[in-house]
Image (cartoon, rainbow over all chains, first blue to last red; front, side, top):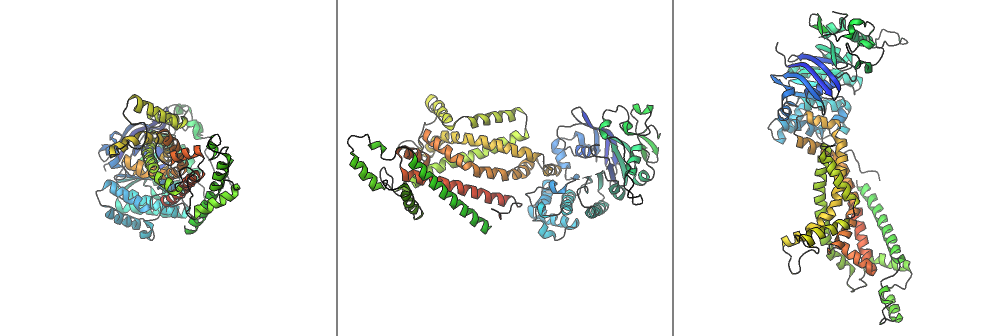
Length: 313
Length: 318
């Protein structure tokens, strides 16, 4: 199958700091890819780099999207991609919406930016989108301001704006992190049904493995700016190869574990990673040995399953 | 809203009362008086002075004078000028258009230039543009208005001869072009300080806004740079800027005073300075009250506009 997005050796650096250090991955049309990792591992930076929304960053590598290299497009061409072909939703829907503009207008303006339609039609379509994302009493909500809506409602507005122009790829950056657990489930259901109905591909960025398990077809695990393991979701959860992935899965609270038992953690902190010359996880890894002084390549460890670790080759 | 307005107007009236009491007291505490010019005049006898004092009511205790004046003010009798005897109301009213012309044009110019340069400085922060506007603003804020006025007259009127040195129109003339040429220099001088303030405030407001999540959303939607900066950025900056406009009114009134004096601009500021020299109490008090009213109403208006722009602000608390 031809790829919708093919990221090839993407490097994002802020001065001397390499926030994303040569990652490659691909997304097929209609697929949901989970991008997992802890705070600061470069997953949000990757998404913002694909949208070319980072300021003061140097981008290297390539990101071929539907026959074009996103990293090589000029600003005007990139503007036509943003919001129309690739849309993005963010972690905190409350602050991601403009506080002084009615939410209906915030959805309508995407339509008007990309399609040549009059204001009345944009408003009618915004109403349609509000219905589609499950906003109750959509006619009244069009005129509401973000502070009058709940966090879940605001995220639905963000999703409505994101899907307004029928994008082929949605970058969802921690879309449920700032929401209550029950609302999280509703938003995930909504994203799942929209992606299924429209055939839209999704890159789901999250630190929450539960979210990934529920939504993603494939998962890529990032650590300190690199992808350390990638596989289809079932394989990754059943058979994690990389010690970091195993550590992450081990740190998920389990219902059948005693309430007085300590939650397993990964010792050390991510700060040690940038100093590491070879495998960046080695300073925190229980299995580290001499070979880890070299950077391990991402190599196949099974069918559609890759990992960057000398131990599991 | 109605209750808020009622409370605010009540507060404003109290404020105006305070301004009038303090203004009246200060004026009478200041040495000299309207008749001081005559005390050294050999043709004016002491009896003459006493007689005139009695006529003007200046021989009565200050609080009696105040009550009489205040009663007159609210009933529409603003008194008569001590010099020339014309009714104060018409003296002040005929000066208002000239002052409005100067203030309005300066404020409009300051708004456009100040906001534009502030946005530019914020977007291009830590570049030569940012440093240049910062330096210009610092100069404008630290040097006195009259100095700029005199400098302007020296350069453009005296040395280059491009612009008239003062007045609102040429004697006998008064075509549109003539009036505009007369307006140009005082308008620029008065606008200079205002531009500096607008520019700095806009820059800091925009710098804060540019880092907000909703600005990233606007760019992620694929909106053009103008729409992102003005439609989303400046829209959010309007709230602090409108508040600034309200707070700037006293500065504007004060600046107009100096500018009108330097350029012999026949507005209320020049009238005030002349009346102050002669201690023309009724005229001074009338201008003081008009100025205070403008400032109070301006701030009230600014608060109402802010509430209209920002739906999160509800005008219920005072």
